[in-house]
Image (tube, rainbow, N blue to C red; front, side, top):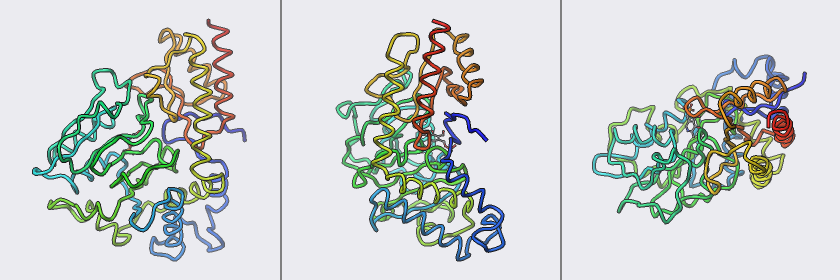
Length: 358
Ligand SMILES: Cc1ncc(COP(=O)(O)O)c(C=O)c1O
């Protein structure tokens, strides 16, 4: 069966070898006579999967013993609440850099628990850019500084970690494992798996043990307390999603690790942006220095032309290029598992469409 070129922002395309492996093992996991979907999360098989996924993730990122990896549920949106519930209080302040809808949503949850200072916002500029470090007006003594490394909707991305004296807390949902991280700067990193890491249903949380020790004195329900999950697998995890994440991590390792993907993602996005910039038929929506290597957003001259572009793209096997419903336009999501061939196919289509409609 031919697979289309899939540019979905999430749940996003997955590596074909992973899907095939899962298909092959689905009804009978490694000769056990049962599917992984039908086994206890306390079984030897699942314990092995969990441990392997944790160690692969740590190896890929170069994370040492000072980090714990948790596989939680509730999506990145739950982390908007869980982070401040664990670390913020009325006598503490956290700084939240506002570079998009997801940052804004995180801020809305944080103010329930404590003081939030906003050191920079591009809200009044339609979120078309990422701040320079010199523009960050950080508060005096923030407990942490929260940022969204890649803004999936707008197509902007921090080129590197923002400068701060406090631990960084990052929503890395849409660029996690697409490039190396300077882990010393972070206290906590979270990401919904469904873009760069696996299927929907599991949220990855990397938490530094020393940061966990700075928990606020809040009344935290057991399941929402990070320490509960750091001690042991507390309740039934999303076993199938973790099982698939483990195979995606294996595929990342075998393909060449994070450095390989950083370089590939750079090449893919550069090709697409070069095409966008070749004349004004396609127009990038954000400032050039802030452009994302994961979500390439652009517009055509009018909405009618965009409709035609999207519908013809779809007929040509280029899926899910429609921009987020809140902003419209076109968005090509080119995460790790989106191969160069898909980017080339999109560029060929863009050239042909321009020729036919220019
Ligand atoms: C950067 C970012 N943060 C958070 C979310 C929300 O994630 P979830 O649907 O897993 O709650 C998304 C979803 O697209 C996202 O792109």
